Image 1 (cartoon, rainbow, N blue to C red):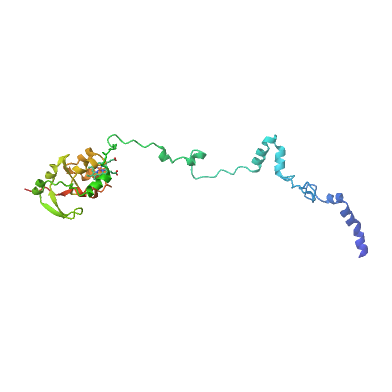
Image 2 (cartoon, rainbow, N blue to C red):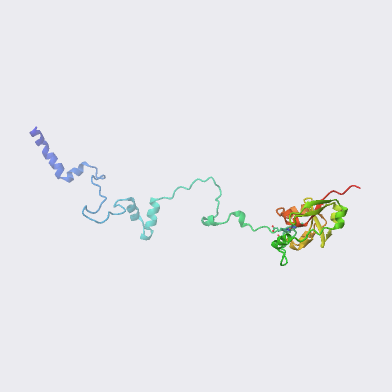
Length: 251
Ligand code: HEM
């Protein structure tokens, strides 16, 4: 057994002591010891980066000038990702900064109103603001100025006046009677079946006296709702209520 081992010893010792002969057994292209590190184990300097035989070093060595070095290496290593296959055939926005652009619906200038539909701003006289009108209504002044002649002609209805606490006579007013109240100092108009004396409100109307006088002596419900259906005429003119619009009495 000992002689057998001794017969193998020279071979083993040669393989251990002679690295060149050992290398002969390995392929030359694949060294057993990786040669990535250039410094010794006792060296405190950081490892070479990129690694000595890395692809970065190879590509940068092939680049023609140092200024183009980083460009070439980065493009070689990191090719741009493939273009995403979007379902959109047309880009939503024309440029990269277009996320800050207003939507196309708001880029068009507003179409100007036609001359006939354009509303003129009406300057109310001092002391004729909506608040002044509210104060006048609450002052207890008689804003009905009910014509006694008209009341006698029509049937008269008694109603409890919420402002005065007493009763007020409300007339039954046919269109023929309404028509007679069409002048600026005696103007009535019907809205939603109720007839109001609009004379005291004329100078307070935000749309102007002229507009309001268009309905003097007639039923203005349609024109009113076409102009400003959101305005509460019952609340604004409650102190001016004269009576109710009734059909023409048959003779
Ligand atoms: C007696 C019943 C009426 C009352 C209580 C009344 C009340 C008002 C009120 C409160 C406004 C301001 C609305 C707002 O700014 O939103 C207004 C505006 C206006 N009203 Fe009347 N209105 C009456 C009848 C009418 C009638 C019959 C017309 C037209 C024929 C008319 C034409 C206008 C117009 C054109 C404006 C716009 C003014 C502006 O934009 O500056 N109003 N009205």
